[in-house]
Length: 240
Image (tube, rainbow, N blue to C red; front, side, top):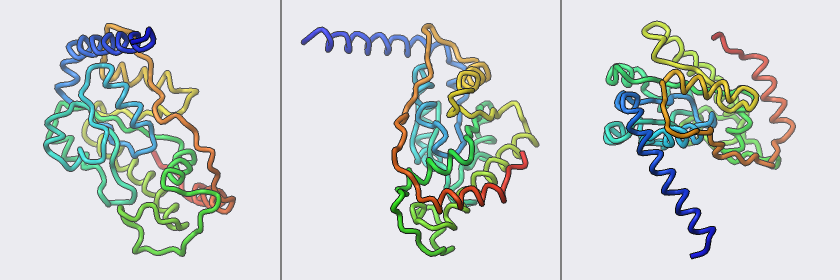
């Protein structure tokens, strides 16, 4: 075994020791659970990896919101959620009631940057053929369907869903929800510190925020798509 390989093993073991110590320090926060209920493409992978370093058992998948065994097993939850209004949305109301000590994170992102990232994730490219609008194809399982109506419904859903979450917690217990954008590099340090302070996270080591899924896609979208995004954004604006 060469020196580089040995160092990788040593660093791995050190990291595991830190995680175990941090797990002990964050006993209360872990016991109460943390739910990230923002939409995907909002830094869910980075948040999951960040909380793992604090000792949380982390569920980063699309299944936890529908699998009771996942809810019992894990302490931090992110990813999954819905693509369109009222279609497989996070059941945050039940989570709020069933886990009265849990804390919630609504991670958000600039809507224009978010929709471009989402479209690229769905396979849109500069050469994508735009299909005719079809309301029958605005479903969770058809979210990769390439139509202008899909884009409009994506944007409307983001704004509607985030408002729904914020209104719910404001009417019940605002202290159980924090709204952050951890994708903006200019304000990321402040946003991450807010999360850390909100949950009173503790650590024996210095934990930097991981930049997971950080590769920027070089794919461009068709100019007509960019124009349509700007049109929809000019017609829809958040009221929160």
